[in-house]
Length: 559
Image 1 (spheres, rainbow, N blue to C red):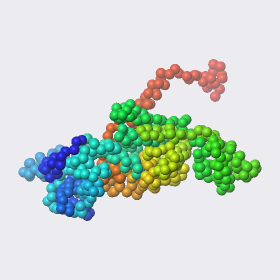
Image 2 (image 1 turned 120 degrees about the horizontal axis):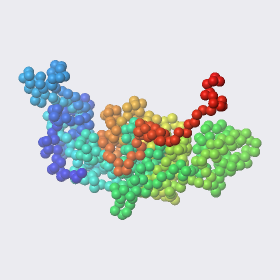
Image 3 (image 1 turned 90 degrees about the vertical axis):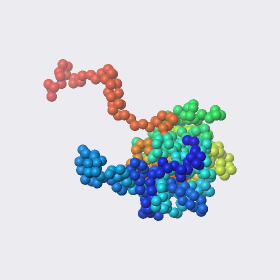
Image 4 (image 1 turned 180 degrees about the vertical axis):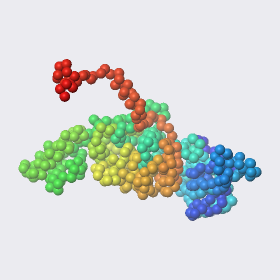
């Protein structure tokens, strides 16, 4: 959308945008009451504006409508007969019906855009009774609702001229495509992201939109997707798609790692990982394991396996040590016979991440524990590489990373029983300093570790009706005020609330359409049943009559 001039966008010059008049202060210190006729039909969540003097300058202050109630309407007796319209009753009785409907709106002050702070500042004063209120101009909202860091007058800036923004959709309370909403990728890529929604509300679809935006030519992210249900196989459509083509020939590189390519070299595990895999070994077993592990870690070769570890423990504790014997059975069963682990194979980091590359780890055939283990090892290695890069040491990853986790509660559960939880807590609390961001996608916020969830600075919240999950958002997401939480049950698929570091104030949006196909659609059960039935009907019958061993007997005579 092109940005109009200051004169064109002036809130003082648009008489047709007047929506009501200030009646007086509201209950809270930043709330006031507006009276408006019915034909304005101002919706809850709408942004309005008024002007106040601040330090000798006239400032356009933004406020949000938080509630709408009828203040005056037809008497109840006019509506006693549903077959007769109330206006007909009024005309029969000679009662004037012009402007009979008046509405009382509650509004909350957000503030004026402070160019020095590049965000909203509260003027600490309410509009005076009688002040006329207008709808905030579209282009103005595009500039000031997201945290774009604009240090000039927002009306002088065209948002579309800025780089590194993700176009996520449009403001919900305006006409479709009237107000584009862009959020800065740098904000959520460094301060972490949470996409929270009930099943079927569009969380994976919205994640796909953000991934598309991160792979655009003006971002070229290094993106790693942990996909436990194989929901993102359509992202490959970005390759060669004109929407993602750069003037220099750039096109996103999308690569998939299926379970056959996901291998963990045993020597890359820590002794803590192994103890978690073995499921609570005894204290004596842990002592033996730790001693053998320390000794074998001193080897130059990184291709040792379980046999080498057992030999090391027997050298230290004796051939007949009972605890080593018990460990042997557990190690062989849990690691040596698990195809996830190998002595000389590993997922090479150089193949996984690179600028302009989206790598999807398809983990659908791995059990949950193996998904957590591969995540633990990869995150720890990647984080160490980023630490080395930022501290001037040799590193193969000298660029920022962003890792996105579908079913995030699998990897960072509130129960605390996943080996991947520790490294995810570390990255969400410290990763910002080292250029490592995480994104959590989940339909059950209450099942996500509170420490991890609270560190997600930007939130995309969609329909959530479960009270326990709403409470988890209330306790863990700072930007989720009561006004945000009250909207959650009423959202429909494709609608979301943007809040947190990437926004100057929470807003309701309609998520844009994806450029690639959505790969996580629900299965149409009735169509599949009919297809399967037809397939079976077309197959030749493989059933044969039962042979009861009685010659010509039908089988009933002997019973």
